[in-house]
Image (cartoon, rainbow, N blue to C red):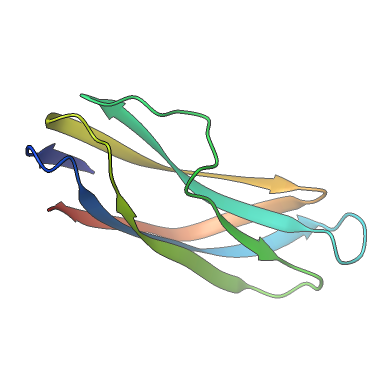
Length: 103
């Protein structure tokens, strides 16, 4: 999503997704990650400062997400992109959603 950020430098962002493992790794250590990249007036990529983490131990679908106040944004058009990944397993992600508004 793209938001026009004013002088407050703030935005409220919510994101979520469904996750299911396609290959399980070590028992109890199969993590899925959701996080944001920010581009445009502000750049913050490949960081986990806003990560949402879920641990999946079986072959079930899990929903997870985050609702955060993002501060320190530069005024102007800021683009928020939902990124996802996995640790110690291979995960499939679906129903990815992102929404937000400038404050």
